[in-house]
Image (cartoon, rainbow, N blue to C red; front, top):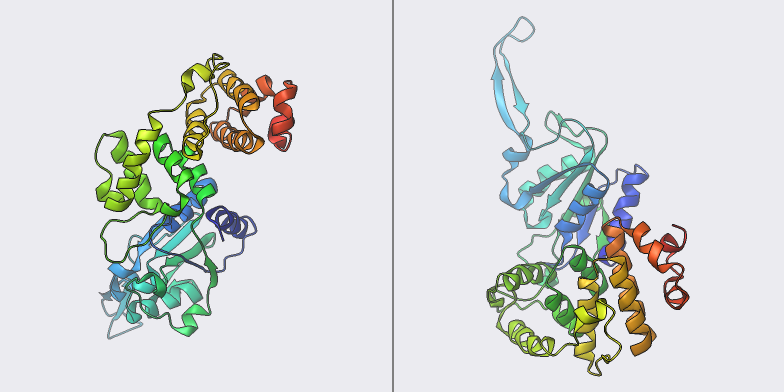
Length: 340
């Protein structure tokens, strides 16, 4: 499933109060941890990320603490004091990351928590969901086999890389427009696992690359030399874009839409990233409608509406667009605009 489908699935588990432990499988670097964290934020609930591969069994079960003899027990007893990182109240997601990188002994302790929602004397409060994640053997990750009894306690979901989901995320989080445009042109470079290299392209490392690029630093350390070389070549194309600011200011009547696919992606992405006001959106729409085909208009419509929705500015956008007949035919599918 795509990242957006995974978000929807996990959200529905929470909304319907279905506390079934869920295992998320996927290649390294595609954002499994970020997805689960975003689900928790959207649900306005707690989020605790535990890396089981970094823990020993006693770290999860807790430590035995002796209690003095009493009239009820002449020999005294020991009690297991749970670790401070386990939740004791509220609602949230307990995320067991890198589950199958944990050795069998650690997975055995986690199995009690996953199955019985308790370990030792600790009990997970109601309202907390247990989600876990791990890499697959085919990803050449250093993983252990998951015992069949443990695997049988989970729902199993597999998430795959999806450029459209990444593009939406990247626009919402202000990635460099050059990075977004390049990956639109070369989506196969969004995730390219390279076993022999330390740095290679993935959604995670492209986010790093965006930050490096904005700071005028080389992106090679994040995505590797091969991908960085292609990105550097693409930047030469980016310097030859139409005057996007003139288009957004209503002065694009003499500016043509590029013919090369690489520059088309750059133009559409640049217009989306720079459309900050409803009037700029209107001017961009009019220019695209008169200069290009519906696929590029629709791409812009999808992205810019998502942007304004994220910023909670749909009301302002609707006030400018809904009465414009030439634009209306391209956004009629967006009920949130038309019903505002």
